[in-house]
Image (cartoon, rainbow, N blue to C red; front, side, top):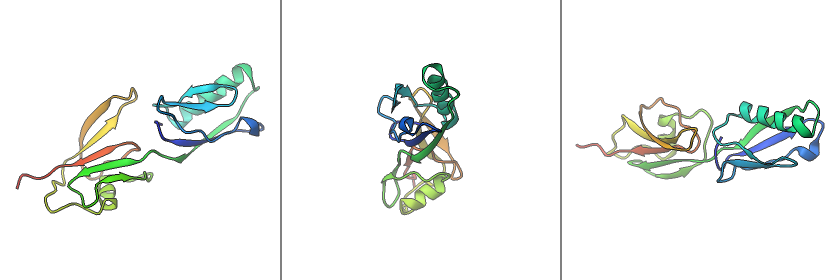
Length: 149
């Protein structure tokens, strides 16, 4: 999870503790009773366990928390595609599908490899050289280079 992702947090039997927070720029979600809770870099399961532990500690006996991602942060595609820009993330898309969403390659595009800028768990950007079948993740930036000739 990362900044811009919106989630549905349900605490069974406690609708007053359920909410639909968005991960803020600091990587946190705002939760009733708990305040700011770290979400960036966590999977849905890890965040669920963290919330259950925090609620069980002081507020609710044996809480059952369910989390569903409602909207992911977008991905970006730059360079030699017909329509570079920002696009809504669709779960399970690969580089080939992302390029299709952006209108396809230009005639000058280098199709393989493709560069992806992706944040690691600490938020540091990594540059990866990938092929067409690599999965795109929320927040990725794809750079389609120009071929030499």
